[in-house]
Image (cartoon, rainbow, N blue to C red):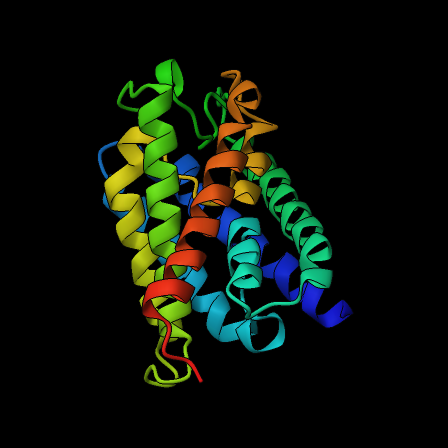
Length: 229
């Protein structure tokens, strides 16, 4: 169990450090920032690389919503759910601390939004609460279907991390303007702690919506799509 939790810690650490780090350090870099597309690719790469690196140890969840969805889909034991959540949240927070220490080394830097998620005035595009809630539910449900499908018994072996990484990239390309893209409560929690925008007050949505979306995705897969023996 220690190896599984360690894998989830390091995987979530990498996701937050690489994905949110690309947003904080590189997205708006003067004249040559990577922008939304670069950040989207970075998030996809974090999941893909860690899924290959440690996915064989823990299953490569790196996300409380994914763990819940896999439990509902019959791919993960309910008894391990809470320990996985703790490892994921702690791993994300550790990454946020390291990212904050690096970013604060630049003269005059302030955390601002610190790659946090939000709606209303905290949404990059000014989208309201309902739009944010719906986007996070739908996109997390789709993410779970991608995960369950690409890791099913009849899917081509060895390609699941690529499909999952590209899926997360696409999710970010769609929803960064809406919520700055969560679909992952651990990622949202980690950076909200350091944001100066009141993101902690909206954090509830980025737990509730991904968890609901994950449950919906898992139920759709089991009821309509699964062909696993």
